Structure formats: C-alpha cells, structure tokens
Length: 456
Image (cartoon, rainbow, N blue to C red; front, side, top):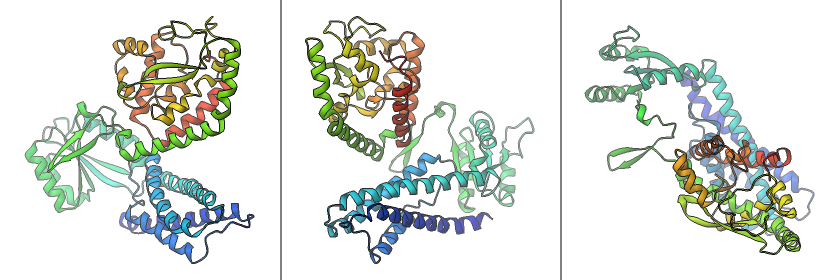
C-alpha cells in the first residue's frame, strides 16, 4: 500500500495542479472577455505554459508534502513555484501583447493562480493529513534510548496521528522497567523483519553505537534522526549550518532570517504602503493637516524617536493629536488626557493618527505587521523588568501586530499587559508567515470597527 501510494500520488498531485492552473486561466480570461482590446492566451500558447508549470512543479518536488509540515509551509512552497512561473511567462507573454489591458490581465492571472492553487494545495495537504490520521500511508518508527526528550517524542507520536508515524517502541540497553522491546543488540536482530522506516536516536546513546546504527540504516535504506536534548528543545525552529564536513545547529534562527521570507515581506510592505500613500494619504494628509492647524498651533506631524530593528533609532511619524508638551516621550496618553485636542481625540479613536506610519514603512523603518514600537524611555524601563523584552527588536516594528489584535493595545496600566505584549510579539517573531500577516491585517480591521475600548 505504501509503495503504491508513493508511485501514484505525485502524478495525481501534478494532474490536479494542471487542472487547477487550467481553471485559473479560464477564469482570468472570462473576466476580461467583454473588453474588445483584450487578447487572452491563444490555444498553441496554453500547452506551453502548462508544460512550464509541470517542469517547475516536478523539479521543485512540490508533490512532496512533509508529514510533519503545517499547511502554511505547503502554501509557502507554492509561492516559490508560482514566482518562478510568473517570471518565466511574463518574459514570454508580455512582450507580444501590446494592448492596454496586458498588465491588468497578467495581474488577474497571477491572482487567480494564487487563489485557486492555494485552495487546491492546502486542501490536498489537509486531506493527506486526514488520510494518515485514519491509519493509511504511515511510517514505522522506533526510538533507541529511553527517557527525557525521547519520551516526549513518543508522546507526540501518540497525540499527532495525522503525522502518519506508527511508533513500534523503544530499544535501550539500560532499561530496568521492562518498557522496551529489548536492548540495542535485539534492535539489529529485529529491525529488518519489523520493516522499520525511521529510527530516532536519543542524544544519550553512545557514539560507538550511534555510528553502528547509522551504518546499519544506510545498508537497509532506513532514515535516521537524532533527538535534540532538553537544552535544545526551546520551542524554536532549529536549522543547520555546514562548515566543510562539520555541522552546527542554529538555535535562535527565526523565519525572517531567510532571505526569501524577508524579500517577500518587504514586497508586501512596499505594495501595501504605496497603495495607501497614493489613494489615501494623498488627500488625508492635507485634510487632517488643515483640521489640526485650525484647532491648535504647532506642526501637523508628531515626530518621535523610537527603537526599530536591532534597536536602531528611527523617526516615527504620527498626526499630532495633542497640544505641544514636554512630556510626550515619558507620559503615556491616558483616558480623558487634557493634552489631547478635539481633532486629536477623533484621530486616536479611529486610529487615523497612525496613518503617516505608512511613510515609515515605505522608507524601510517599519513594517505593516510587527511588534509595536515603544518610546525610547519606555524601552529603557521595560528591558530591565521584562525577560526577553529586547528580543522584540529582532525585526522591524509594525503599524499593527499580534498583541494589538489580541486586545493588548493602548495604555499600559498593569505589568501583565506589557508581559503579555512581549510574549505575543515573541511568538510572532518565532512563527512568522505571510498567512499570519494577512490574518493579523484582517483582525486589525475587525478591531478598528468593533473594539474601540482602549482607543484614546
């Protein structure tokens, strides 16, 4: 059953991909069909594009869906393949279509492919998870060495049946409880008959035995994985660096250390902030500026030094919502704060005072989503009081963030509020994905409309 699955699944996956791509082309063409100047793909061109997609998908092995991967990793792999595909077809298609709708139709095609392929790929991922959960397409695994993190891994196998890993038991020379299948010697005697697919080795196993197990596994085509000890089980995504033939573990690497992830997030920031600048801030700044000037003397913008990525200081922009005062850096705004002007109260209530920060995003000082930047004096205080506080400066600060959509925004009245903010910021940094950013953006709109309790 297992061999049959691996034989047919890749081809079924690619076939589903082709049908989805074809459907995306069809929908994209239908949208622009009413326009006379629109020239869609002609029939001879279409098979060539399908062939290009097949080659990319097969070369990048998109059909290999890791059994322990989450759905966002499958979606991320799709983004990479789609980027290659769009670059290639833009070079083939765009130069030969000089009509006024060519760019718009290309963007429509890109959006259709992203939506429909995203639904298809994530759907396949979830169906495969369910299939494995019911006991199909499983891999047989043993653990060599009991105790500590080995027991934690065994518990994961029991709880996460959707991983499709059937745990057969332990082998350990030091077992005195009778909970193992036997000692390491017995493992070598039984391994072939048990048809083992994966061996997990405890870090406490002797080096001599580890080498023997690896050599045995190589001869019998069995995958070997080493279980990191408790000191490395830090709820982080570990990665590895290679120095010649020597490997080291990267303990505190984060998703945004990856160059592709950084470029993708930055591209999202530029497109989003440029859109806001052209279509909203172009008329909002003169309008709000006039209202601010009519009510009180002083500048339109409130410009304040704040800590950004790697604690680098930048000038954060906001619409001025208070009368000019000497306490803006050290005193938080409180409810019914006498410093706040009438127009300032409206700006704060609607969060419009933050809108100029899209300029900060375009300049590269901030991101759309990230930990909210605090004033420099607040940072000096909090970093001496809150563990891991400074870790929130590993990435660019954001206009909105996970802490804000979870209700931790506005004035900090109690210590638990800043501790909760830091925990959520830390979680975001360690688990960043473009899907999480999109989710936070959607929840931000919801919070702006529904939850105005802390907006003052």
